[in-house]
Length: 80
Image (tube, rainbow, N blue to C red; front, side, top):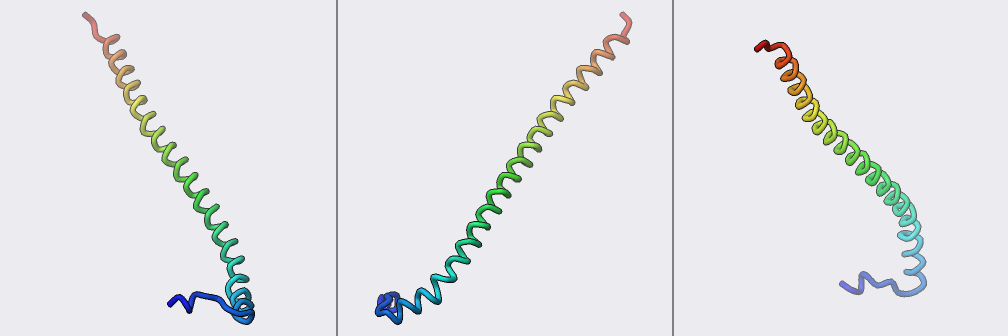
C-alpha cells in the first residue's frame, strides 16, 4: 500500500508534478472563491437574523405602546 503512495525517480516526479500539481492551482483558486462565498453568505444570514430579532422585539414594544394608548384613551372617556 505504501509503495503506491511514494513518488520515486525523475520520471515519476515529473509525471506527478505535471498531472496533479498543475491542477491543484485551479482547485486552490476555486476553494478560495468558495470560502469567500460562504463567508458572505454567513454575514448575510447573520444580518437577516438580527433584523428578524429586532422586528420581533420592536413588535412587542409596539403592542405594549398600543395597549398603553388604549388604556389611556379609555380612562379619559370614563366619567366618574
